[in-house]
Length: 407
Image: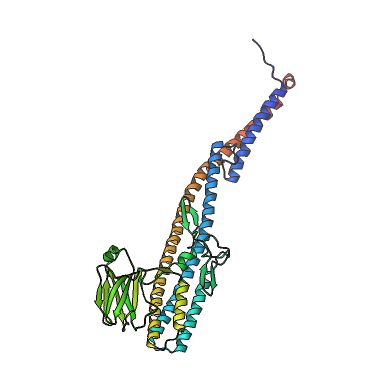
């Protein structure tokens, strides 16, 4: 049998080590309660700390998505406001066009109307060159550091690009930014949006454009959505030609009376007045034209002399074409506003998605990192009692001595 000698120094070191360990546990529990977190360092729970760090990054990403959505929402709301102003300006142009077409205006009156239309045109150009809150040009595409529209004597030119940015507003969801100006202002439908009609510039009669459009979509489609000319061989007879001026095969001819409707290849055209032999009118697919060119043409037509019946007829036909084009532009802006409104609705949906995702992530993060206050408080009381008992026990053991026993 062997005996192990326990010195006083060994006894003291052993008890002090246990006291310090209990005290460290107590301090750790106090830190958890004061911070509200179970995991304050990676050493507390390495797995939970790693998972919490990944969730923190996801929450930060949601915050960045929210900032993106706020900027995009501001730009789309600004686009909506600008297009609404443009629509109001076009409505005024429409009213002026109807006034100029129907009222017995003199040259000075028509010149006044033309001046107001040019002012409205300049105002629309200012809207097209509008900037957002950050000073970036709204309709410039990706090249939004300079005015996207340049005015010149030959007309307005678009110097932006065709890029339409997509902005991340939620996980796996990106929405389009404001439309590039080329699509909003430079590619505006003419006519009624499907077909357009016009009188030939060299007409010498008094034939006036009336209503026109597609009456049989299948027949028009069967003809390849082609363009046609109604060429008058006399004031009362006409033939239908293709866009190149060649008669159709088999020939299509007819007689004309003022106010009558000319129907062919799924299209119809109504005219007033008396055309002259050699006059012609075109009807074909709607082309795209910049809005400023439409307004320039309308103002120029009103400024042109209209003293003879032929000159008045040309002016009236130009006004009719411009009026149809302005109506098509109004519809075009409504469509653009609707598309922007859909993206604004998408931002609202993205916000709801972010909020739901954030709630889930934060709940998971709380489960991983936050402390159960009731459990921690109970553990703190238990550890405090254990530390007090250990200190009292050490105090008693430390007071024992062989000399005390001998005494």
